[in-house]
Length: 109
Image 1 (cartoon, rainbow, N blue to C red):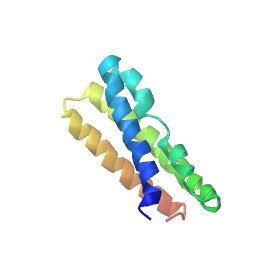
Image 2: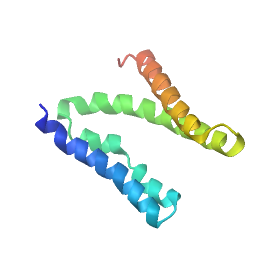
Image 3: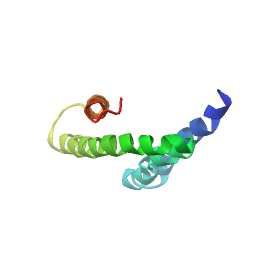
């Protein structure tokens, strides 16, 4: 079981580390190209074919919630004096909660 988790773990770590590394040589906006890779699409490559349809059914919902969360985070970073780390963490937790609620209403939990 743990052997099948090695490749996805390395892929995720490479994406995060690659984004951090790229930000040292370019702007953070350019580094976000790596950090913003659709890892959910890449993760589907590690799923059985029979599970892919249900996976993407859920993925579409929380990807939309992610878009709204990013817009809210960006607005708050620009227009408030709140701690930037708290804004990002708060946005993450709000995204997670709203995504789960959305999946529940869609009957996917």
